[in-house]
Length: 331
View 1 (tube, rainbow, N blue to C red):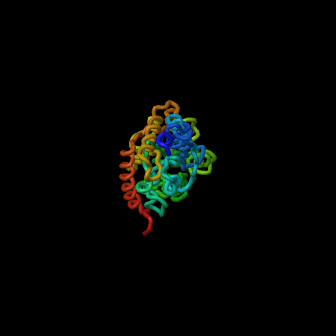
View 2 (cartoon, rainbow, N blue to C red):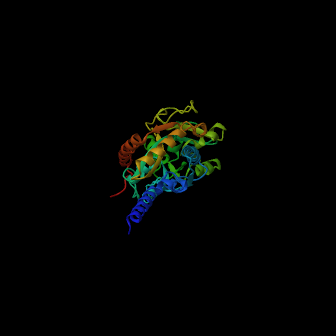
View 3 (cartoon, helix red, strand yellow):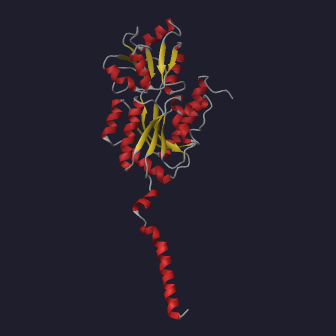
């Protein structure tokens, strides 16, 4: 090969190699965007039936966070098992940020009561805590009692005959009333439902007389269809300032229940931050705040580190509660 031809050949080689190395920089935008999170819809599990207060709040969070990320977040209802189906789904899910779930308080409790396919600390990424439930005890307006003390007196005179609805065995509304009943020395008849929406149908239809649940009951109390006997928090609910807490009524039972968003273990910290920031921003969205106000849920924000620490503390605390109530699973 002559010298001029060799120089020309080597020059073509250099240019070809340089072009190949530079190729990623000139790929179409839609190809490069495939590595950007999120680039497809995100699924968020609400482990309760559609139509209840939890469902409405989760849908409000999903819509707002989706807008903040420029993505679509689709809510999928997976009711049953005390609200643990979402946490269970995380165990086999890839940690890519495209499958998330609400993390209700029951996920820290039920593993102490029965065998569960997940560890709420080791198998989950706790992304952000957003709000919490307000719990209460409500009854039909034609019930033969008007206060919690009168209900206790009625239950003592009719052991095992007064039924109450709750959101599933081992859930917070169930155990709160079991602990209260134990301290009050009464025997109630618990009736489990899959969620608040089903409880409301049952009590408004006259199939049960008492319910323990979230503030799904609030609009029906305000309209006069139900009577609120007590709330279960440490302080009176601002929407019902004349209704005493269970503790004020004479029984030392306090139940509060923050919840937030979680995903599978091992998530990329950058994806966790993206999700955290988007969901945190929802607490500034007037539409989300209006939904929280509708169901009397306060803003309860915890960042990723604080929420993770809360999960670890709560898992240990729930173990002690379950053992105290004699409900721990057998070895």
